[in-house]
Length: 251
Image (cartoon, rainbow, N blue to C red; front, side, top):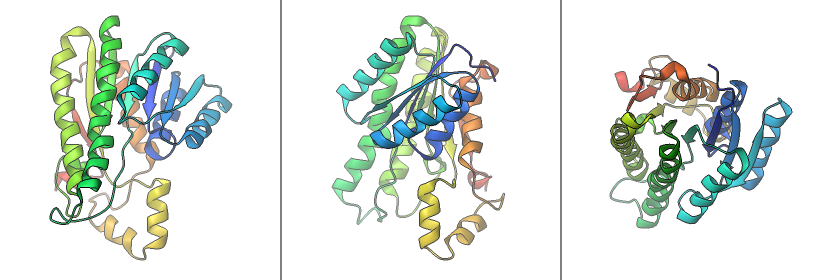
């Protein structure tokens, strides 16, 4: 995969899958705009990319805020002159609760970040890409954007929304040189997941028993699928919803 001379934006790039995606795109030759709600982790990812020889800049962004997303896209163009690839990864899990017990505050916080955030990013990414007549967008949904999950009504609904939004945008802009797709990761060994596993005896065995492949993913495995969708190796892939989940939703 060759992304030389391409400019890529990755939201939620301060840690986990987002950081791995930023690293994968940089390794393929892209210049990377690193965006995250956490300014410190965004700067850390940016420093790692620069240390490996990549061109990278970081910016703190709350993707649920229209003005901050507009400023992020404008800053990307001001810094690099263009936007070729965008990976809308920023998201939160929120509190676990049944549908009957999920608070409105929890619902709003999750949906604002996971669904509204992707919508806002796509809105302004697409405007820039449409001006140029080319581009690739990859939205990070979830295996729970394809199937439901008990105790996660807001999260699952938000990720199902990302899947629908991806398909809709994809068919709107395909004839204008822009590809929109989504990746649906399964359980992944991010730092957050590792902390939960450490504090919850037996949970890793329970998770692995539900996966046909018998193990969780590494962030890098998810990132490689994302990088492929951003590259010219996937030029005929439009509106695809790709579970990268060790076979979870195939069951």
